[in-house]
Image (cartoon, rainbow, N blue to C red; front, side):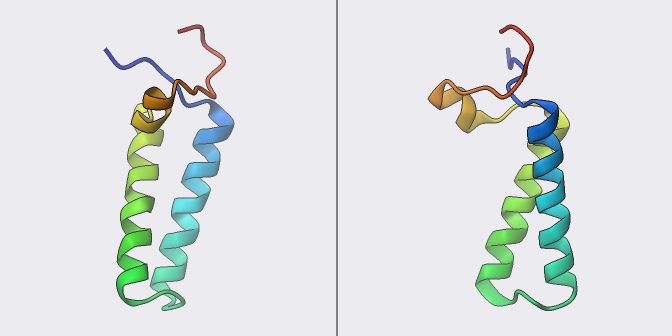
Length: 69
């Protein structure tokens, strides 16, 4: 079972970065391959924020959540 390992501050930072990437793409500041890579990263940030779980954190044993695991 996936245990929560993303705290509220981490979630807000991930969402803010995803929104920033979206704006940069929308206003053509980023283009081409870089844009597609950043959009994929933004999508991952949104998804992990919604489920409060980051697989990379789990692999490395990290957690920004205040909840006891």
